[in-house]
Image 1 (cartoon, rainbow, N blue to C red):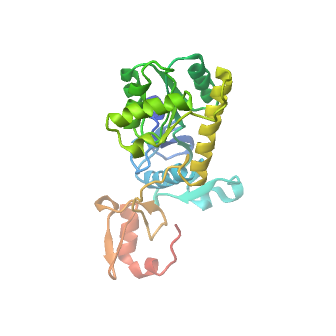
Image 2: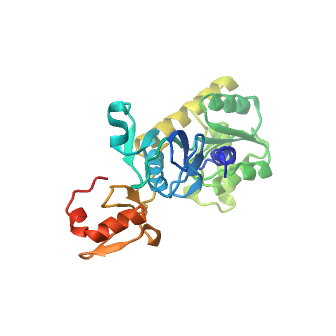
Image 3: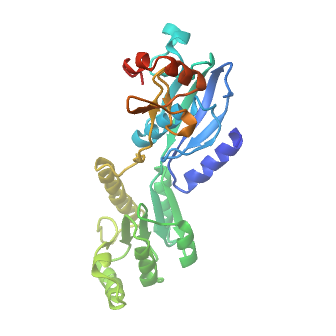
Length: 313
């Protein structure tokens, strides 16, 4: 994929609520296969889509991108050797050694793109529209739906928040469909009396008590008779509080990245991905991996000289 196709895929992934990191080449020094504006998407499990450079750059970028996804912080990498830049490296930039034979260098900006809160509002009353507008102002992905088909298309899931605001127009069916999605939060707009009637009906239909107990009735703080704008504020305040609690508990924006194996070339100190393509060599019961044939050849000539040095990763 070229840079523009990568951006299109990134937009689609963000719309689906999928976490990833976007890596962009912002400077290069030849010879280097990476070009200005080259882009790639890196997923939490280490898959790379696009192009930012050759085999020398990819393992380093993947590792840094997965770290950015996990901690939610952007990173600026300078891929080359410290000797190339001396004291000219700006504060906050990380210098990472890359391929031994190349004199090229790359500067790559890595930006994590994490899922925003997903709010599905079942109903199109003035309150529902107000709630959707306020959630949008917070940068949340808020969707108004009015039918079973639209709710299914919204893709509510375990990380979503659902508010049923049908106001008597199919409350029971809407709540039952929302329960099946197992959302993080499910609230029903209405009085406690109305809520008891809806939940009682669903209990008679055989829905388990533990599922019905998760339905918040009324959604938000119980303000009694008040305006639809104030009801929307009360519901949003409850959702913001829930989101803050999730973040404190470690279930918020950052996405835990599954572990991916990595190794350090004992000759040049570059990070490489273990595997047949990394030219493995065994010495004294330990398998070492290399960024290039040149490093592997130098290691073969005197392995003791390199295994005795401290790792420079």
